[in-house]
Image (cartoon, rainbow, N blue to C red):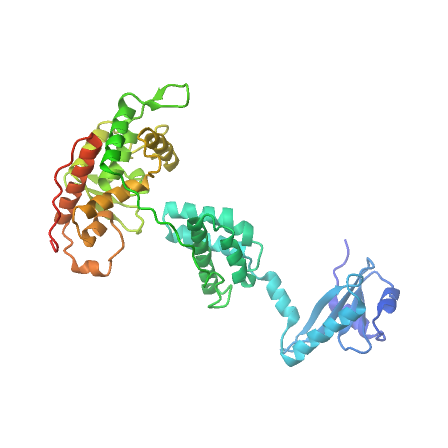
Length: 432
């Protein structure tokens, strides 16, 4: 095993030798030894060459920084650069040290050991996403980091990423504007934290000033005819089954799956809220559902209308799990998003509403509430939106008008699913 190199010994040995004019011929004439051999230039102080035992030769410049610390700045290998190029580089380094009081070697070492964007993402996930985001959001943000951001930016130093790097990444996803904007938002949050954690100078977030794409916001809701077709499909799914794969007959669906879809319509809840609902959150006596994991990050109360209570009562009869909508393969787990999405794909095809997403059922609740004459405050509270949060304090927060509104919407949706005309909707008086 070779002995470790002692820089002081090498330097002392170099100072005992006569400086030479470093040029191609003189550099190549230097003989390697058992330890590195250092020779300095006779004109430019600090400029030298190091000959390794292997015979490879490297140019360097030695200087003292403003703290009087000795520094070695490696310039490059002889053969890959010429002696003249090495000399010019050494002159620029020495000028920077003298004029600007900079420390090129220290700066290079700092950059070499500086955190990469991949390091930033590791900390962003561990200290922010895992601690402050909801499970569904955590999963999505981690997927964005691993699929989009880390492969493209991970190898770069945090301090070296430019706005052009981010703009190029954002522009490459112009065909999917919503996803491109979400990726940009995640990236921007990570770089904001990089400034907080001292990985990057304040006010230098490379995601700033990059214009987001216009997103086509889609507010699809079900018409009365579409509700009728969906209701018929739900009943058929439980009684006769729906067409399965070509030539393989029909498939029956349990009340758990059809009931989960009806709950989305009757309550206006988000899909994750229904899938994560447990029986201990349902209070039939009070007529409420208490949501623990919500988009806002705090518990919220949903007022149950009569149709929602009826759906839950029927589902309760087959209760065999703490989950309202348990997985059909494992009752200890809730029904998965992928499973309900696959079921909905067949349901909407059978009902001839192929462009309707599960989230559009929530839009249907909001639309019907608005059509009933409810003001924005009531619609906000019915769907538990954050909108109008500042002015919400001036609105009566009693659940009586909410219950009335929820019942009206529920009755209309129930009538639509049953294929019968809905009750006459009487608009609420302005200011009521």
